[in-house]
Structure formats: structure tokens, C-alpha cells
Amino acid sequence: MRTDLIRRTALTVAGIAATAGGIAGPALAAQAAPAERAAASVQAERRPAGERQLDVRYEAQPNFFYCGPAAARNALSVQGKNIDVDTMAKEMGTTEAGTNSINDITPVLNKETGRKAYHSTEMPADKVDGKRVEKLRADIVRAVDDGRAVVANIAGTATDTDGVSHSFEGGHYISVVGYSEGGKTVTIADSANPDQASYRIDVDALAHWIASRGYAS
Image (cartoon, rainbow, N blue to C red):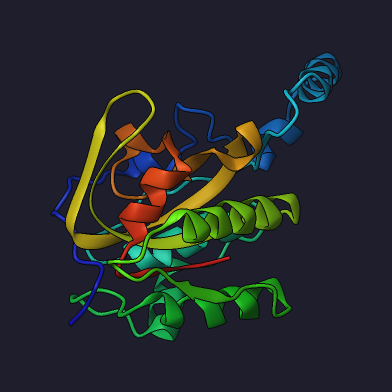
């Protein structure tokens, strides 16, 4: 059964632009004036220990079944790559039923990264214990510190740190593009809705969101 069907969401060209919530592309930063770049550098130096956020050139998914290719595209954008989602969809075998599993996404991430940096990890539905949450946290920190975003296949409903619920009962793919508090809280880039392009979630909640599915890190 396909795993990433999501609710049909009105997605517009507005999603192609960088949006609120801290998702900003490297191209935007590169155009800043010298004084602004210096201020940004100082701000980065003052960032609390145990926190790192990657720059994302965010794009919303163009239709209801492209969340897999879109999540991979957003994830790879932190490395300065700009890959067409239609090309990715063909490589992942994406159809109107979605992208089958994280195992179809990991090889594409490795191909575009140019090295075998990504590995798939399954999260059993009934075994989301402290050990697996800790592994997810460590995998996210390791990947982000390496300059790479994580792609996760999730299903069900999760609540972010602002108390907003995000529901994908049929399944969905998201990108994890940063962390704070040493990985206890992670930053999500979500292609489903440009109005909720970026939010933060507790890593334990993310682990339960991934349950029965998997992630590439």
C-alpha cells in the first residue's frame, strides 16, 4: 500500500518563495549587504550551544502526491542543489498513489549528494522506546552537523512546539532541517502548505509520528 497520500491542499506559486518561520535560502543571504552579512555572522556566533539550523530554499509540492520528491528537493536545497521534482518523482517511482517508502528516497538522496551519506532507518510501530528516540535524535544531529537534512516518512497527527496540530492520516514526507537543545527539538520544512512551511517539534513526538515508517539520515 502506498504510504504518503495526503489531504488535497491548495498549493500556490507562493510556496516557491522563502516563507516565514526561519526558512531562508542561501541565495537570499548571499544578496545581503556587507553590514547585514556581518550582523548575521555575529548572530550565528551567539546561537545557543546545541543548536544548528540549515538554510533551505523552500518550495511547496505542486500537487497532492509529490510530498516525497518535494521533501527530498527541500532537503537537498540546504546543500545548494536545485533538482527538478518531476525528475526526482520518476527516479522514486512516484505516482498518484504517492512514493512507496523511504527506501525509494534514500538512493536518490545519495545520488544527488554524490556519496553514500544517507541510510534508511525503520521505526517499528509498537517499539518507539527511549532507545529509538535517542537514535533518531543522534541521527538528526549527526546529519545536520554534516550539512545534510533528514527526510522522514510520517503518518497521523503531531503537535508542534507552538501547539499547532499537523495531521496526515494517510502519510506524508517531511524534511528535518535543524535542531536545538542538542536535538531535543527539531525544525521541520513541510512542503504540504506554504502557510505552515516551517515549525518545530519535540524529537519524541517526531519519533512517534514516524512510527511504522522510516527516515533517511
